[in-house]
Image 1: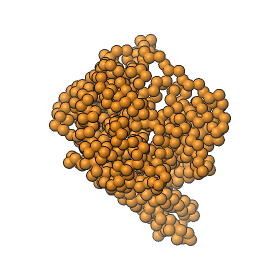
Image 2 (image 1 turned 90 degrees about the vertical axis):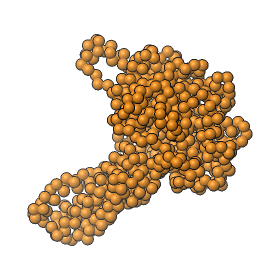
Image 3 (image 1 turned 90 degrees about the horizontal axis):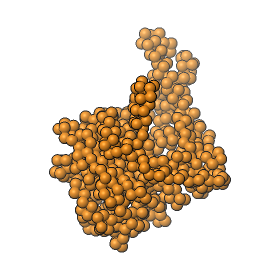
Image 4 (image 1 turned 135 degrees about the vertical axis):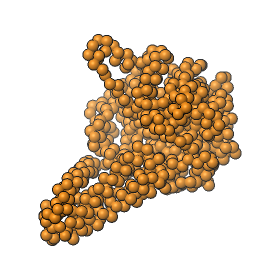
Length: 631
């Protein structure tokens, strides 16, 4: 998941009583932070009910004690089993923290180093890196997601083998995703195979299965009695069932093949101990598991270009900062089909929380996160925001211009991201403004140094201007790397997109006229109906392809990661688009002198050119004929 992804928040309907004083008081009470655990529980239960989310497990701790641990709502709808502090929840990518802890523990023991090249420990695991001689992929790159690898492909996401597979077998299944797309140690791009490969390196060094090493090194000392990466009888007995957004339709248990990256089951009590371990800086109940320096290293990213210029909001070792006004939480979110989790803490204040829900509802997740954070910081002094830079100066002003995304999580998504993410950076006084070209959305930033900026209401710097290299100019904002491009290219792409969309729309509208006329035998130039027919078929193929691709993205693992109507349909329609577009263009060109309405011919020619251009673009990016279930 993106490290600063904003989860959409649902807004409560406001009754007419808001017109009255009592109504205003009620609204103020809802927006104010809860002032007790009882009120927090009531507010969370209300969110669960309104969002059709069955249940939640939660822990709030201080450095020295568990302040509150609870289960709210339902763990399993069919049986009516209630959520309790002992219910086991799928915590997704929060699992990754134990990979980094294992590596750091072994580093402290002198058995490996974060800077070790991966080939030194796992030469038998296949991956490609064009810069291997000068810039090898190192363990730190795997843990900080700066290897340049593609994320695991949909087929790996869809793989649910209860055998279970060994890490070696899982890593061997689709090695084609592990290709460095840029020089390792430069750009951040979230990649689930990285921690899996690091965990395999732990197995090679220790001679133990990763799950066994983590059990004896961390789960047992922390008293995390329910924590497990596998589907055990205990998980079957007290695990939470995960549900679709309706809160009724269950997902089957997912056997994640790269278990260290996201398969962990843990209870609220387990997560309470895990949180206190971070707040005690690597110790627990008087026993030291790793050094305080190792915990501090987890919280600080170091291997990316953005980290080297001092950007604070960079991903560390399975741990990243998350701003909440002037406060900066550390931790990690987690998500999988039907479940969302968040673990976060304030090191300097010695407090933290973790919660997990068993519903695929981002609105519930965002609202609960805000409720808990507001509750934790309600009595803490608001940190002072850094002073703005005295002047933007150079090199800040030299970075104004247009940018496109340059670090896609999945390479196959680049065909869409590079256009949908077109951005303009403008600089005025102390301020920097990023504006999305397509939707007009804008974000404001305040310069802190000549290379770093923050949002006006946050203390954490989240925008960095990277040093210009010989070829490109890059900025990093909210975890994403953007590359500067010419304004003519940015606006040219936007303009062509709207022109093509207009032509496709007009093709559908005109079809409402000429198709009935043709069927009634009233269309002049009837023998040359192909001039109108093939561009229309291309347009319909494109619309169908886009609809299935977008519809599949709502549940990509189930719909696109397997052989389904969505996956086969989008592949077939992409081929139909290319075939009918090129054939249609040929048909139109060959009918240039045919007895056909000139306006209709020119329109068909323009639509055929637009369809062929889109087909060529998709062909270039590997989307024509893509079998997503094997990608």
